[in-house]
Every structure is written in C-alpha cells, then in structure tokens.
Image (cartoon, rainbow, N blue to C red):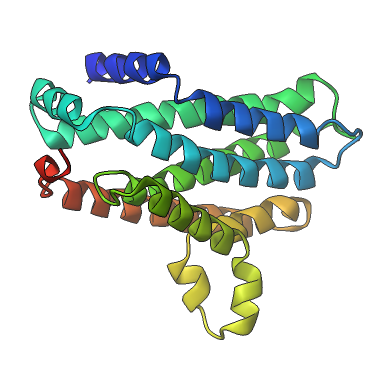
Length: 236
C-alpha cells in the first residue's frame, strides 16, 4: 500500500494538477487573515468551509489525473481495484491532513487572532477542518470522470452540491423536517458548531462531528462497493 501511495503522490505532483486546488485554498485562507485581529472560532469556521470546497476540488483533480489506460495498469499493479481505491483514498486523506494542520496552525503562529486560541479550541478546529476536508473529498468521489464523463458537467454538479450543502440551514427553514440535514453533506452543521463552540457543550459539538463522520463513512463505503463493480474499460 505504501508503494502505491508513493506512486500516486509522485504521479499527481508531476501532473501539476494539485496547483489549482492547493493554491486556491491557501490564497483564500491568506486573504481571510489579511485583516487582523480575527475572532478565533468564527475564523476557523470560515477556513473549514474553504477547506471543504478546496478538498472537493482537490479530490476531483486527483481522481482524474491518471489517463484511463494508466489507471488500468495501476489497478493491475495494485493487484485489485479495491486495493487501488483504498490507496487513492488514503493518499487524499494525507493531503487533507496536511492542509488541515497548516490552516489551523498558521493563524496561531503568525498572531492573527484577537486572543489566544488555546489547545481546546485548536483541537476542535483541527477536527472540524479534517472532517470537512474529508467530506469534500468524499463528495468528489461521485463526480470523477469514471462516474461523470463530461468534465464541465461534473464540475457544475459538484459546485452545486457544495453551495447547497453550505447553505443547508436556510434550506431547512424552507423545507420542514429533518430531511435537509440528513440528505445533504453536513457542512453547515459542522460550520455552525465551530462558530459557536465557545457557547456549546462538548457533547453538542461531538454530535455534529459524529454526524459528519457517519456521512463520510457512508459515502466512502458505497463508493468502494459500487466502484469495485464498475467496468472502467467503458471510459477508455
């Protein structure tokens, strides 16, 4: 698995497709912190949403960077499609982990906040960033070229899902019942608990994080199940 992850990292960085999503995410964070001082948790909530969108873009870029024929060769070398897909997800998870650490630590070491962040709030912020990053990546799995062949169509659909997910609270005010928060990727609930973490109990915050984690596991689980049965040769 390690050899597969090293290959995927090398292949992706050589393709230079990483530059757009990574640079876009970092620039957006830098712009946010260009004005100081900033409130701690409100800023972390904003950068978590930036990472959510950036990770979806990163996921789509990473999943589409290999030529279909090279992808088939990679699957053969990995000895199974499931193993290849797991390697892909672990590699993406590593990218998200590094970005989440960078985004959480940056404002602390550069003095961008109006007060000390503290270990508790930094821990919550890292968990929220990492979960929203994974969520964005998990959503992007269903818009890669082997699922939605037309790139412009896939990008438009993915952007629509991201926007609707971020604005889920306003939609829930229009559509009664729990359906909006149950069906849409839970970006808005995580953003809300990060914004209000100072006034919420740990149980309430943990509940939102668990909701996001369950959603991620379901998305990835179904993706692994369905993709292992798809014939990628149709996309050649």
